[in-house]
Length: 459
Image 1 (cartoon, helix red, strand yellow):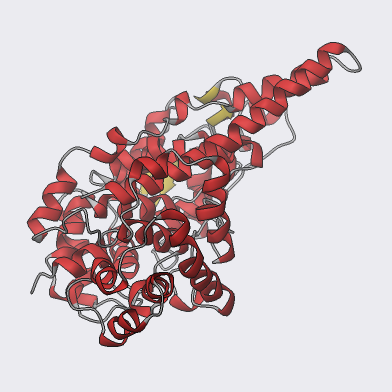
Image 2 (spheres, rainbow, N blue to C red):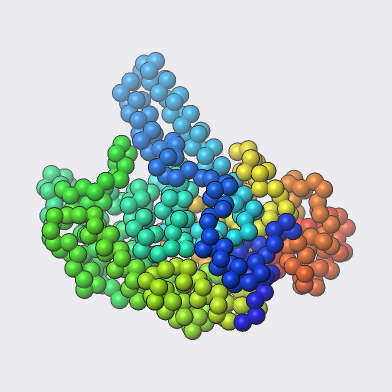
């Protein structure tokens, strides 16, 4: 294996920067991942429990409007609701700006990539625009602290998160023979159980059956949520008796959250889960058809370390196949824009302090044109990995337009393209790109050519 710092920063990190050194070795990368999360401290995002406006405050505003029809109190309540919505829009933009600032500022780029990978793996989508600002707090609380820890811990944090419970309607699920089911018309909901097995753990080809889906769905009953009280385990909604998932019995006594958490441990340590996660991680970082021996090595390290995700990452980074010279992955729109800002050396404090309008103009709306509405994939399987999903006529037009127009609004003066091509692509950029940068008539054209190049869009 020949370590390449440029490849390390582009393929496994967040892109090259003239101000921040690329890692010098795999040990440097692993050491950074094992250390403190500096970017979460430098550029904080509220945890879900402290994020406002919350589900509770939004619900309270709606109730205040309902309870005061055609009165001055109703007008005040509507004004308060509108202010909460505006606060939510501003927080949504601020969260986006903060995530970009972290990407621009970090010397631990793989942590940012892993956070986005696992957030996509456990995709949630806000049930309404009024609460879309709560997706980042969900990631900050349930995903980010665990990206270098045990997968079981992340899995447990996710399944009790209100964002996941509401997204997949788990909070509405009742055990068919539960006390609550005798009083309500609702029944069992299999959404979360199915996604846990099909997407989050064993994978679509894993060794589970429809019976396992139903048994897991019955085990998950009791996971409750309300806007007023938040998450709570509701024994009267839980299906009584033991449930058998993948041949293992859980529960049997009084319904308990511990039974569900124990099942998550079992799912996390299943060999099919190890293979599914290893393959998905290798596809994300390296190639659409990763070396089977690479995947096998990653899965084996994961299982040997009791489901430790950093051990799986180490297995990937130490394998020769991870350093194949051909760049076969395409940056998603967020990564494209953030890596461009990083190459342009836009100060992170400028990014984090951007106004709502600036965030929309430079990041949010261009991402949408390129095909990625931030934190709003179309389904629970997250964003597609295939290059052809992103390199479309509209997607490329959006990237080229951004490359030719955005940099001069962000940096004054623009860098010399003859130098910038090395800032963005390293000391040995492809000669056609270097030639185009040298031949450009203006700095705007030269910088744009570099950012629009296939070499910059791939990793």
